[in-house]
Image (cartoon, rainbow, N blue to C red; front, top):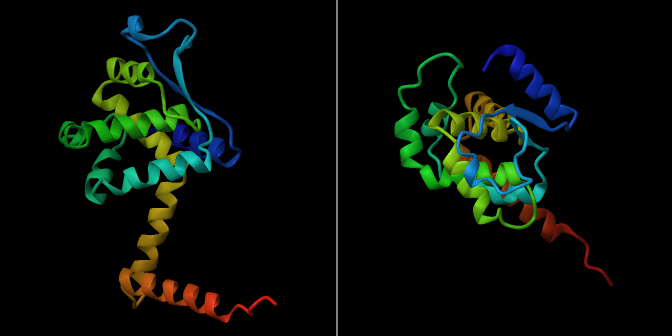
Length: 176
């Protein structure tokens, strides 16, 4: 992705504006009348419900594989086919949930339209846009930075957090 496009994504995320991803639907026969009539896919600010649904799915992807999906525009990504093949259904589910972004499940036709009209590169771009919208990259960067400067391991940090939470629960005064 170009710097200008990343800046636009960032500003749209901060201002909670929908992001339009230019998209060409090549197999229009699978699209129901009245759906996807434009030449773009709109990714709206993700709801907390959608984030709770996507988060466990993202955790199923190895960090190294997720990093392979992040690649500069215009450069050949030698890992793209390998990673998309490894997580095919999971990536499609994440992309569908991120685009649909409603309380119910995406309709079956919705998933079919995404599968019929995307390439591996399209899945990568849409996944990146969705992940960017939820602030996943800054979160990962901050965790990595903390790990690099902290004398504690990730397990010790989690254990300390759980101990603090249990202490606060025990320290709350009993209501009369």
